[in-house]
Image (cartoon, rainbow, N blue to C red; front, side, top):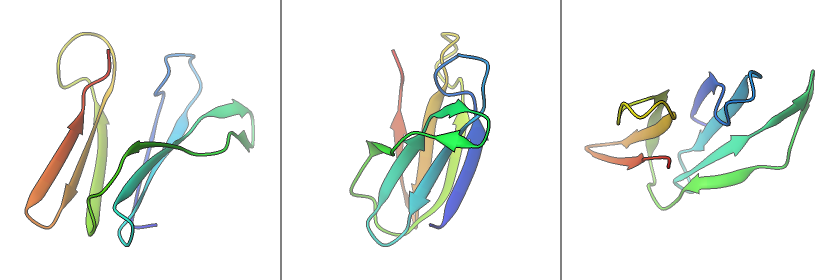
Length: 81
């Protein structure tokens, strides 16, 4: 794990985790099911080795959060719909 972001990804009012793995280049979402209980990870972005930063924000201004990951001098953006 190299980066962590806490945000309500699915809009259910409960904070979820977004974690990155700098070795595999994967960014994974862990949905919080209930207090202190998270789902198995869902890979939301893959193939970006060296991930150093993950941010969650509504970048597209559509009311749904998006996930941005940065690795070295490259970045990927997952725009939710």
